[in-house]
Length: 362
Image (cartoon, rainbow, N blue to C red; front, side, top):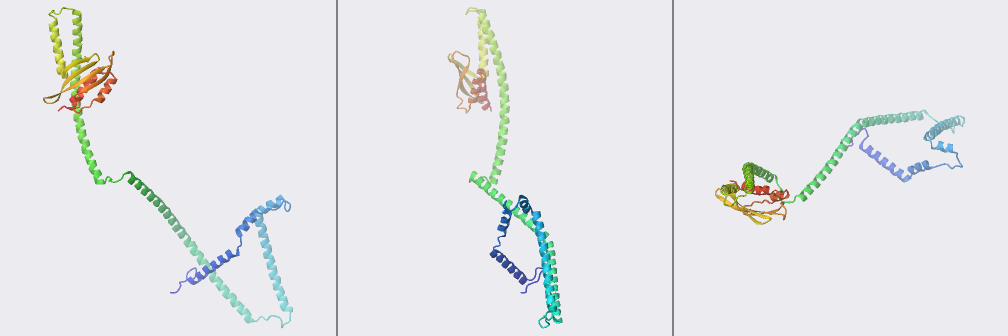
């Protein structure tokens, strides 16, 4: 398989050039030129105070002055070299003229022809080398933007790959944390959908139940409100009746007491029928027991007892005890605490009865 020539030469020439460059690099490393050490030593070198003045030291450190001196010395050396070559050529020419004919070098036409041919061959080789160099430079100018663009593209791709790799690592760490936080069995998508459907159905049922309870509560509140108004009216009438009894100061055989007693008895009977009060009993000076027959279904009634215990020698409500609510599954602890704090006796009795009736309205 033959090597194909290019702007950089054939493969063999490229290998020779590469080998020469490697040999040159190894020779430079072996020569131990110490360019960096010498440059740092030159920069750190300083004239002694006895050898140079401050102005000389400043001039030696100025790069512009040093560059001008170096340029002048180079120009002087070039002129000196040209003069040496000129004098050497003149000396050889004079010696060839004044010397003996036998000792003088003989330059023939053949020698001049060979010299011209050699110069022509060298010029042609130089021309080919220049054209190759120009072609190489043109290729470099053409390929440099393409290489730079490819380099930028590869650099951006490398940055994007690094970012994606970091994102993958972060995602794996997040997934590991989630797996540790939520071990098996995990909630799958079908189970989550079914759970959502069940929750929607449950919420709809609870909403309907809440609406029904609100309607029942509104009805019960209206009923309790009407009953409370009647009780207040009866209480006022009772107070007026007691006041009238005290003012009358009549004997027990007075005929006016019989209608008043009948009216009071009827009023108490009405109050008992409205509030379902079965019995009221004062166990002590600070304890009152109220027994109610509450209707929990059609034709079915349940008896509950509410015991009001007051603080001694005061009118403040101390605590409230209930009996018969556990069988109905009714909890009134929050109502008792709320009304005891504000010393609302009528309110706590009405609230307990309202909750029991509301819970068991059919």
